Structure formats: structure tokens, C-alpha cells
Image 1 (cartoon, helix red, strand yellow):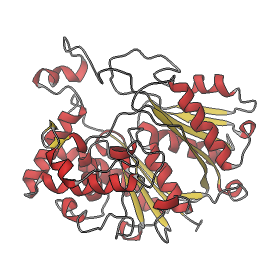
Image 2: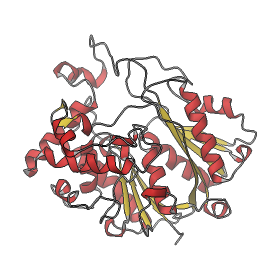
Image 3: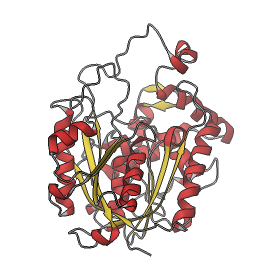
Length: 394
């Protein structure tokens, strides 16, 4: 097991309001989330001495303007004017889970005492991802001419292969979309809170890239979330009950081919990342009480359930049926609604929910008797990051 298990804790979380598209500069959302997380932890802003983020944005056809379309570490430092800042990082790979892991490492090394990690997502008004199709560069020159203009098309090919290989039907995925929407009704921060989704809605929705329909895709939003981490011995003295990080894992993609990844790459990414997490934490899938698995597209959950070890390959669509992933089921899954119903703020919302469930602070959606909480915070083919949160150090 990892010598540093349970030595870092999550002591606060914060949220901005979530809107369908930009109404105010993105910096306002990020600042709201960071202030909320610091207040939730019982700290003063002057206590914060570490900052981390992953500022990259999806290709949306607009300029990168700090404070408007992204919120960098420099932007946050300018807004907060922290008097005791001693460490900061802005990761360019591994998505937001990598920023959290870097903050954990900084706290373990003693270079900061209280670190804030945020993720802010911009969604411009007007047509989403309205990009010119006149040229392609880099690896995408080999895929874009054939209609692969975004990650959805590439993942759809892999998911089609999965369905064919295992003799499954896409209609079974309705259970995931409908269940997560129901979970989102207990999350006041979710974009689709209070907006029901039925199985019939799912089955009758338009196709985006077969076999993905509209409700297999996360909802682009404008918003931000943030998390405060600290050394476990300090966290015990703070106001809310902390959640302890028992282990984490990370994996970068070996395969880069435009926006298309093979099914085997999705599976191997999840296996590699979670293997480290299970070994470091000393837990196994059978020990997990609740799970959050990244769902930029619904198929990511299927790959995650299988590659992380919760079920055998080819069985995930059957695994999620019959109430198993409900709040009172065998493995409550994406209990905050996931990106499909809460909004695309990448994996930090999954990490926050994993910590809230472990600390017993998830409100109406709290799962009973949570001791071990698992998080798969990003799509495993690209940048696989996984975490285990526990309710008590061990």
C-alpha cells in the first residue's frame, strides 16, 4: 500500500451558478466557486498558499482570452491577491484530475498547506463549436476529411465495436441516462435539476453520431467548481468533516490518432490507472460503496465499469440494469447526475461528489454508510485519473 494514504484530505468544496452559455466573464464563475470552497472549509482566503488548475478548453471556435474563455493561475492570482502564496501549477495534460494529484503531491512535500483546485468551463453564446472546415492540421489531418470533426464521432466508432463484439443493444443505455437525470434532481447545482427525462425521451431523441443520441452526450455549460485540499492532520481541525485520499492513479494515452481511439485503448487506459489506485489504497472494486465515473459520453461509463474491475468485459450494460446504480442500489453511480445531467465541467465535479459522499455531506443524494468512494475522473483513453476517498484514515 501507499505510504502516503490518507495523509491528504478534502476540506471544502465550492460551486458557481451554472448557465447554458456565457452571461458573465468566466472569471466571475471561477471566483465564486473558489470563494465558496474556501468558506466551506472554514478557512480565510489569506490561509490559501497553493493554487492549481487545468485551464484548457474544448475547441469552440473562439479566441483564448484569460478571464473570459479560460481562467489561468495567473488570472486567479490577480483576483485573489494571496499574501502567502508559495506554490502553484497549471497542468497541460491529464485533465483536471492531474491538477488535483499535483496538489496532493505538493501538500505531501510540505511546499504548501492549503491548496485550491478549480475547473472553469466556457460555453459561448450562439452555435456551439461553429468551426471552419477548410483545413485540418496535426494528427486530425488523417481523420477530419472522413467526417471525424470532434471526439463524439471517434468514440462512437469504438462504442459501435463494443456493441457488436458483445452482442449488445444501444437501447439499454437509456437506464444510465434516466437514472443520472433522476439523481440530478437532488443536486441543486445541476443544470437539469427538476427537468425529468424518460426512457421514451431517450429512445426518441435525435442521433448525434450513431450509436450516440442526444442524451448520450454531456451538456455544454458555463460554470466552475473548486475544491480545497490540505494535510490530513490540519483537515481534522477544520469545520466540515473531511474526506481522505487513500490512493490515486494516472495514465496518459499511448495512442494518438487524431480524435479516434480504439476500443482496446479505452480499456487499457482504465485498467492501468485503476490498477495503481487499487494497489496504493489497498482496496478492491468489491469494497466500493459508491462510484463516480466520467461521462462526457455515456460509453465512458461502460468502459470504466469494465476496465476499473466492477464487472466483466461485455457485461456493463447489463450491470447497470435493475436498480443496481440507484442511490439505494448495489453500486450507486454518478450520484450527482454526472456530466450528462449536471453539465460539462469535466472531472472535478466527479471528484467533488466522491469526496462529499465519503464525508457524508451529499445532502438528499447521500448514500447510506459510505466508507469507500471511487472516482474515475476522466475518459481513460485520453488522460485516465482515478481516486479513492474514505471516511476515516486507516
